Amino acid sequence: MALIDPAHPFFRPLWRRVVVVVACLGWALIEIITGSPGWAMLFGGAGLYAAYVLLVAVRSEEKK
Image 1: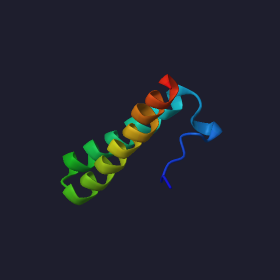
Image 2: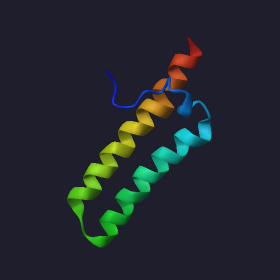
Image 3: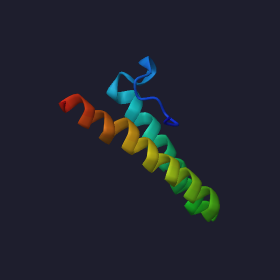
Image 4: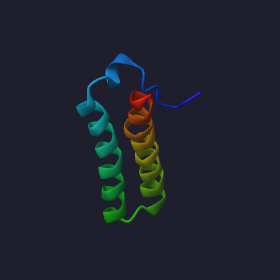
């Protein structure tokens, strides 16, 4: 069971998947700048996970 369901209709447009990833990684950058490494790691991990599930894994399924 995945934490993010890439088959959900909300994630059908590519721009929404990209916005979710950029928002998470952007917030991680803000946390690094403000000096909160714990939160930065949390949001960075969420952003990387979202990037894999929403961008990488979806593309590999589309090629099949």
